Image 1: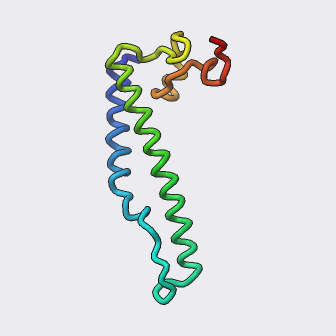
Image 2: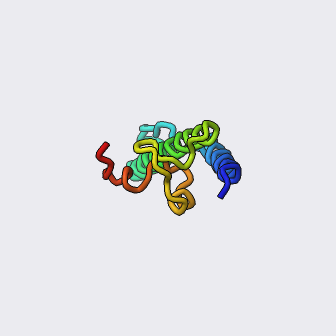
Amino acid sequence: MSSEKIKSQLIALQSSLRAFHDGDGERTKPVMLDQSSVGRLSRMDAIQGQAMSSAVRQRRENTLKKIDQALQRIDDGDYGYCITCGEEIASQRLEIDPTASQCTSCASGGFQG
């Protein structure tokens, strides 16, 4: 797959994630602790929902960072090469995860320097 095609896929994914990211601010706001307006179980549900939304938001932020890094590697001409050992990353790995920055050996801790 060409780096231009991968770049366009990454940009599309990035746009999609940013749209979700910008729209979920309401779900991560602090939960009101006023017992007169919200029951204890409802508050607990709201707190759990808030925690889950925060975790999803954090994963999305991490994915956006990985996309930014992959796009930078494409622009620099380093895309498809392991950032640890410099070897080429298997095309099948990049098809599964176009943001992969390491070969399977280095990602699993096998690189000995």
